[in-house]
Image: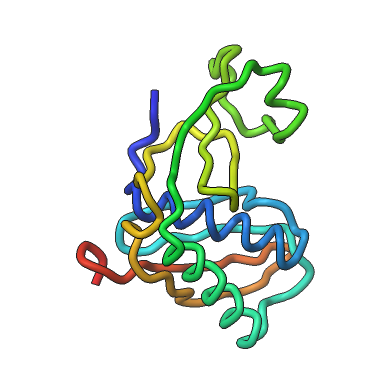
Length: 149
């Protein structure tokens, strides 16, 4: 059963996660709350972000969005998927065929959620705030565009 996340926001979460991995080598978020108006992702981290880092993250996420990358799904056998991905967060009943969401050549990961067909559909990405507490960096974000202004 697929999650009912907003496709634009959920696809933006994937791009944010890959951006955090690439910039800080911190791993994908271990917890996320995805809503249409605003969302949050929690990362294992050692400090809060600087204003310059927030600017760089927003810039990179928006570059990926504007690149109009195709968002596609594919499937891998569980044994093959675990060679490439951390499957720890998958539900027990995920089965032996794992759905992989790809965002162009920028990101791929197991996911059961709904997504846009192209990153251009997402709109603008803005970090609302970030804070750090007891080893957890929380990043709150929203989207701008036709459905989120």
